[in-house]
Amino acid sequence: MPEKKKKVVVGLSGGVDSSIAAYVLKEQGYEVIGLFMKNWHDTTGVLKADCPWLDDKFDAEAVARKLNIPFHMVDLSEQYRARVVDYMFAEYERGRTPNPDVLCNREIKFDVFLEEALKLGADYVATGHYCRKETVMVDGKPVYCLLAGSDQNKDQSYFLCQLSQKQLEKALFPIGDIQKPEVRRIAGELKLVTAHKKDSQGICFVGKVDLPVFLQQKLSTKKGSVFLVAPDAELLNRNWSEALNNSSEDLLQSLSEPYPFHPKFGKKIGEHNGAHFYTIGQRKGLNIGGFAEPLFVIGINAHYNQVYVGMGQEHPGLFRSVLRINNDEVHWIRPDLALKNEESRKLEVRIRYRQPLQKATLFQKEKALYIVFDEPQRGITAGQFAAWYQGDELTGSGVIAE
Image 1 (cartoon, helix red, strand yellow):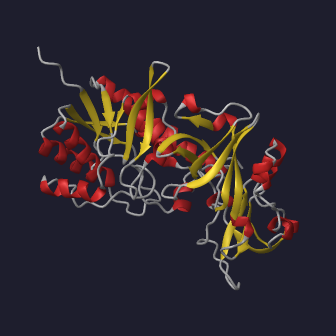
Image 2: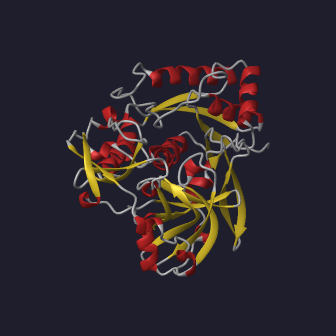
Image 3: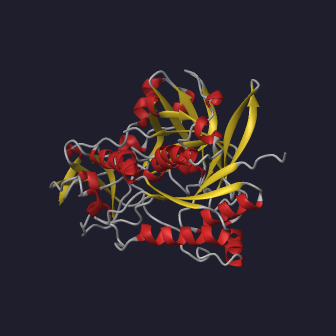
């Protein structure tokens, strides 16, 4: 008897990338099923408040017909709100800036969506992410590696930095070795409706939003003070590189703390409608003028509802060389490579999508993991994810602490 085809459920999003992912898998001989996720239908704060999910569904269904594969739809909006959107609101309320796309992949696409795919008899799930997967043997057992996509301009491995070995085991990334222009060329040749469709932007499954309006669904406006903070001479002269030579936890903890903010350090220059509506490095939305250089948000105190700003793009409050990740928020995709207490390792790190990889040293201490960068980093933001790479393999990540 011929070997039974492996069954793959593809998350057809209505975009070109997932369309070609389905095509590639079919060409490779898999039995392919398209599954569209409805995850969001509230248009509050969405800049294009028509019905984007319905348009995406029609496009995904048209692709499935063209490729002659079965098409299904599943409504995961309840789980998406509970696991992603509510988390996002809670993080902003704490004065942190979350990354909902990372959470969406961990909690939805490779969790509840995976469960739905398994109900359809799937051996694997696949997405249109620009990243790759390899398998290596460690102590006689398979270990799954998450690698950057071959197209460096589109590499999306960062968004998958919280996946587990169990999730990677069932994941396929069919276009990870293909360049984006080639993906569009193939879609054009196949005359797919998604061939020239623009890439989605904004919050995963929600789209581009007016963030304050979106957040005001749950976070109330609250008048507070904006303080202008002058550069501190002591901090300007501090030698950050001492952490590489004296890596005591007390020193690392001290260096990882953001620029010190207190009203006595600054001068009140205006008001805002809620500290939780701002993020580190933000320039727009302050609506305060009359200064020699642009103002940037350099600190937030959600508890006291205060926003601290610095003048100019080179204000030291915008830069840090050390960040901290509490141990309970450290995640190793490769548990076999996890640092033990008092171990350190030179790796490359990014703290936001599309940022070029930065050279750094990771120090695992009793209370936290510390990342010491070779060069100061602009806009290190609590709540965001730092992801670290060994070569082109993403081996772990964690949530940046305050």
